[in-house]
Amino acid sequence: MRLLAVVFFVLGLTMSQSAAAQIAVYEKFDAFEKAIIKEDDTIYVINFWATWCAPCIKELPYFEKLHTDNPKVKVILVSLDSRKDLEKKLIPFVEKKKITAQVVLLSDKDYNAWLDKIDASWSGAIPATLMLNGKRKLFAEREFDSFPELNDYVNAFINHN
Image (tube, rainbow, N blue to C red; front, side):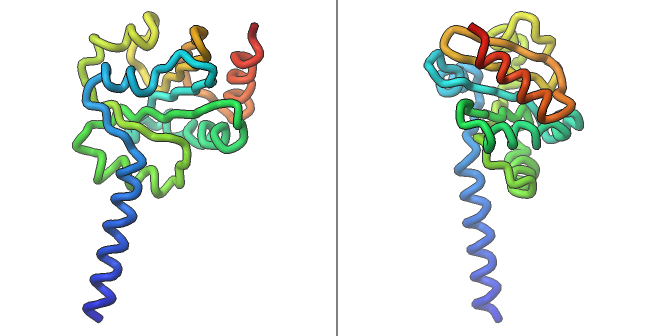
């Protein structure tokens, strides 16, 4: 019986560590910007959200579907949760929702120093989404109400000359 308890404990640690390994943590925006904000040929759909944001949670399945259904785009889900919530809230949330898109934690709370670097019009409200392709960018400070709405929005960005 004791061996069984040890096996389940080790399995639990392994699952937690594997999810933790999938969530990169950026304490400062500059490191996040260097790692995530790229001007290359990839089409990035970067969604800013948090586990405490009801509209964000509602639209996350649409971004997950976009990730699985549209190989033209790289979806990155940027959690703005607190660093202290990584183990107890963010990782369990990602595991429970079976999110396979890339998830990163941006825990830089000096919003005034970096919001304008995402988009000059961003008030800081979430959900918010940034689309990038080379030097082109489109920012949406809003919630998407359905997958077709998000997909159409992304496809309009992709097909815009």
